[in-house]
Image (cartoon, rainbow, N blue to C red; front, side, top):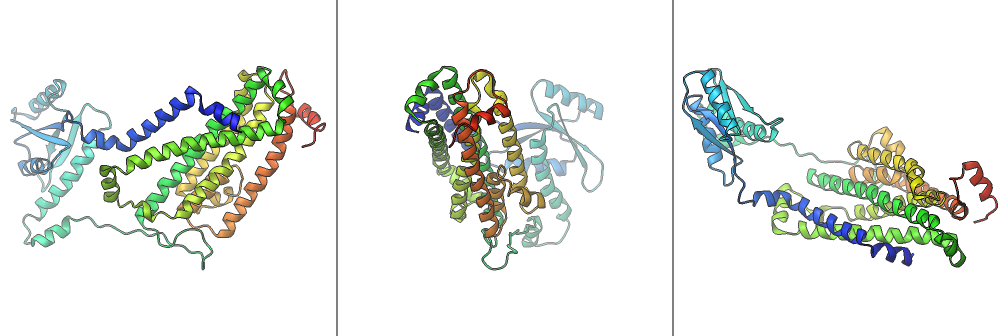
Length: 423
């Protein structure tokens, strides 16, 4: 185990990959802050004809002008004499880079119909900002003639928000979820579930491939023939599995530390506070379940990757041997993401007892719903029993496969050879 662990952690690829991903994690967490601090960033310039709907455009200019760092800057232009002339002039200004787009007003009603025209496809950022501003302006124009107090105007301007709370329907203390989760607590749990599911997938995929590749490389270079004379095949297999587990956990620890350090920065703490996210409100047992399901999921697939690597004599043939495992993992990832948003559906409940899906789905159900204790224990019992069974089977395949060279053996040949060994 120590040999495999040291051998992998000393490689340049491991060190560089860990540093790069840690840096990318830091950048992703701080990207919004870095963009906002860019001294060269300027608001998007949007034009309009000054004679069109001045009651709207004057308020729109005041709306963005009052912001410290506005996303949009409104620029008025004189009327060219006709709608066609105004459109031609605006298009020319867009071609010259003077503006990014322009507003077109139509109708003489209480509030005109507004069209934003731009060359950019799916310009949802600007249109969303304009829609939010125009919604407030429309309400102000409509209410300007009403005899309302400032308090009433402020109350009408405030959006109605519904406080959503997740409850438990399980009687007594029979569930593992928390009673009365707020929206912020649900969002925090969703974030953790997504991170754990993604890290489980990536961790198993990377370390599983490393296990299989290392075993196949030792066979193809004939180093395996020397190793089996000094170290028992089963000791080799479990040593590689446990060693790669430590490698994967060490990388996750580095990424987690990088994320924690960046989230602790003042601007990120303020952002989390503004979003109503408080890490102290997270159920500590959810962290425990994350570790449990990560480790059980890792050992489930790592056993199979070791077995697959042992029956291949050339690294060129390894991809074909591990393709079924990779396919199952991808399906499990998709099923886990589905379970995040549908934790109580019949499919999620049923598939959470399937060992290959349990680490993803049952953890998603624990984080986003409140399954009963017996459901969690039953799924873990089935999963552990499957790991023991696959460990026994993988050990027999490994002990047989590492000494078989040439073409990849068929199931019939492998079964016949396995009968000669007892694990």
